[in-house]
Image 1 (cartoon, each protein chain N blue to C red):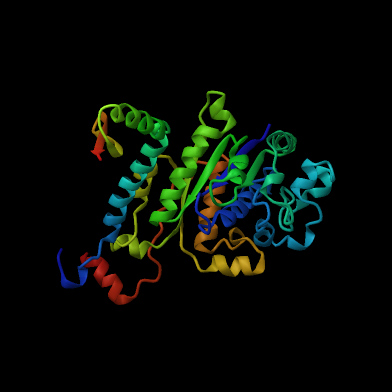
Image 2 (cartoon, chains in turn purple, yellow):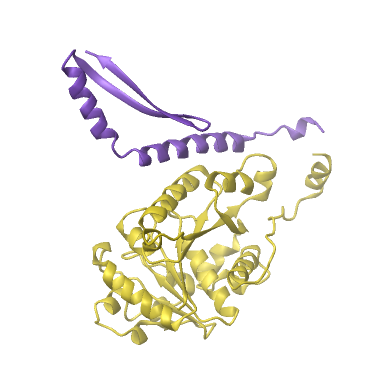
Length: 75
Length: 270
């Protein structure tokens, strides 16, 4: 039933959603210890052809699919 | 061989040492021989919660270095003949811990006791890793609060990759205690529910302990809260200890205490 005194803050839902994302991110960082090396190698390869400013590697998951997304910022 | 249980949390200040003291005493009150070991080198605290700080002569580092025998260092509880306590060193630092010596100590303890309970230090550094190294199982203590839950997930991750049992190809059993639940806040949606926490951490539930002011009073006096069987936290810890001794005790949901007349009315209409 909806009464004015039942107006809830419900910040627990915010906490739950933030935690899910934070823990997923923590696990991704843990699972990809090779990330720094991979980044270095890609920079080396791209550098042969053009200038590179930075590289961004992210693991993305969508249900059962996992992908590495690599952004190359050209210099 | 006794069961070796590490009590872990990741974050400090969630009630890990209180849990260790009360679970240990609760097991002893079930007539099982139990030893609790403080692995928080340099920040000894379990002695205070157990009310045994004046009896500490030798610590576990001295036992590991053969400067004292186990028999000399073990301190018997004032309230149960089945509970013994081994103190952390207050003067040495964490680097004093060595895997081979810890393994020997734990082996010796598990030959004498049915339950060997290790109180891990906060954090996920070397002291923590040494505590979980030879554990059969772990009890994770969390508060219904974001930083505690996130840190405990990290601690569980390290347990799953660095414990000897996992390296040998087995699983380490993991059990969750949700401590300091404030039922009013869970009801109003301002505190994470037990179901939310279980879904996020995905381990077995061992017990729920509501926030209870008498825990402070108990630690002030060095009398573990479990001895106050009328207290909310004390009875929750006794049920947890009974479960660890194999009793089939159902999990109780913490209830809202002493709700006033208006609160009761609101409860009826919400």
